[in-house]
Amino acid sequence: MSCVLGFDYGSRLLGVAVGNRFTGLARALAAIPVRNGEPDWPKLDALRQEWLPDTLVIGLPLTLDGEEQAASRGARRLAERLHERYRLPVALIDERHSSQEAAQRFAQARAAGLKKRSDAATIDAEAAAVILERWLAQPTAPVTHDATSP
Image 1 (cartoon, rainbow, N blue to C red):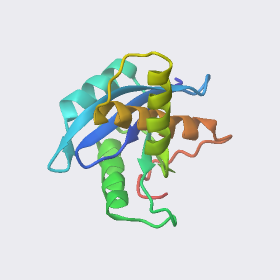
Image 2 (image 1 turned 90 degrees about the vertical axis):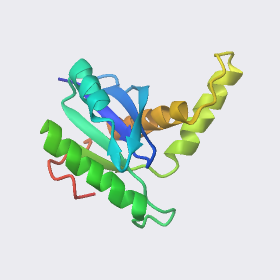
Image 3 (image 1 turned 90 degrees about the horizontal axis):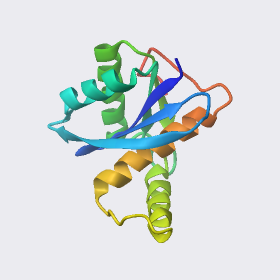
Image 4 (image 1 turned 120 degrees about the horizontal axis):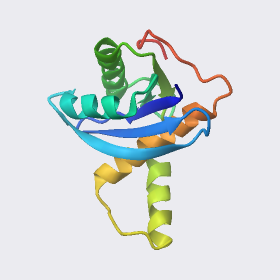
C-alpha cells in the first residue's frame, strides 16, 4: 500500500490529510472535532475505512526551541491511542510552523480565485497536509510502532 493519513493535533480540532508515498503529495481531508481530549472516533474510523492507510503520521507540536510542551504530550497520547485502535505504524514528526504554512497556502488559494472559506477547520486540515508532505519528503521517512518516541 502507499496511502498514509496525517494528523494535525489540536485540543478542539484534529486536522486530517491523506497522502501517497509514490507521489509524495498530500491533500487536506477534514477537521474532526475533539471533545474532552477525545477525537470523534466514529468519524476517524470512517476515514480509516475509506482510505485504508498503511501508516499514520502525527505532527508533534514543539516550542520554537524544539522543546516539548503540553500540546506535545497530547499529540503523543493521540499517537498511542491511534496505534492501539488501528494497529498501524505511527510516526511523529516535528510540526513547527505547519499552521503558518497552511495559512499561507490557504491565502494563496484565495488570491488565485478559489472560494473564500476562512474557518479554522480548513486551516487545520491543510496543516495536516503540510505535516504529511514533510514526512513524505524525507528520504527514509521514519516509522515506528512505538508512538512514544520522537
